[in-house]
Amino acid sequence: METTHRVRTGDARTLECPDDSVELVVTSPPYPMIEMWDDIFTELDPAIGAALDDGDGDRAFTLMHEVLDAVWAEIERVLVPGGIACINVGDATRSLEDGFRSYPNHAEITDRLTDHGLRALPDILWRKPTNSGAKFMGSGMVPPNAYPTLEHEHILVFRNGERRRLEPGADRRYESAYFWEERNEWFSDLWELPGETQNLDDGLRDRSGAFPLTVPYRLISMFSVYGDTVLDPFLGTGTTTLAAMVAGRNSVGVDRDPDLLTALEDRVATAPERSRTIAQERLADHRSWVAQRRDDGKEPGYEAEQYDFAVNTKQEQRIQFYAVDTVTATDDGFRAVHEPIE
Image 1 (tube, rainbow, N blue to C red):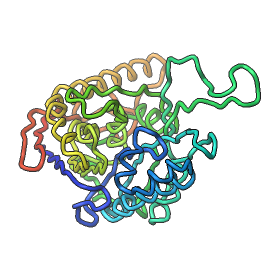
Image 2 (cartoon, helix red, strand yellow):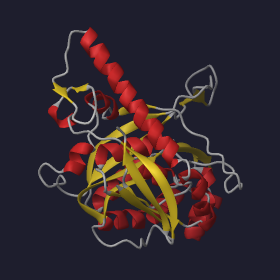
Image 3 (cartoon, rainbow, N blue to C red):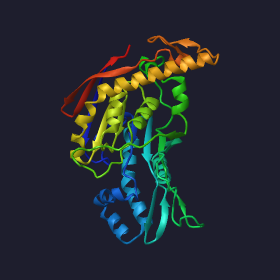
């Protein structure tokens, strides 16, 4: 199996992608009203900087979401019928001249994407535990003027119209199956995963808002099949591209900063090792689950066709894991060759 991974410098508001050309979007945009992204938003619309200078948080919030709204229109255009969009975003808290308040980015994005015709599905709350003992902001130990600390982000899930239909019995769909016990964990509406610090050797960002590889890898495994194309219009450090490569999907990544794109070469070079490690961990975890299941007197009902273990449902029988064998550079990105894991 081969996959292609196109990487482009460009503006997410005008994607160079044909209509109905991607099956899945996995992305994390700049978060409105988070200071680290003020300059990016102001560059795109100077009125945002003016609103912030005036201390007008409501206006700045609205203008920032107007910038993102053009991206949501593009996502609706490029998604195939039944395609899925997963948007990771956090809410913001901030003090300006109009006072301290919370800015509900997840609610605003949900409203805007549904206005563009996408259907909101149940979302996921990604809780990122911290080691800090400070669980509040404000007045210390006495009421009433303290505030809860935000320790979660939202993974918003949308579908373009009715459920996607694949050809009956398609190998690529059934080979892409996840295990029964993985389904039970992944499709929970609460994920507790630590954040990930990205080491950008060339100092391109003082700090990165990148999500850990686990997040896009799960979403890609949940909402696409082998050979699908995954789009990230806010590519950043390229975690979605790496996850798509590891998961055996094609990808398209777009970012305005050409220097960030060059940092991808070192990351995708790790794809062979990462893909094999992830697959072997999933296989080992499943074997342990089968052993525990049998100890509990609950025999799984089926045998996997490619592996020497039982599975709990008929839909899992044809599951097949692949590892990246080689990655080569192309004129517009990378090409990966995948080999089945026996």
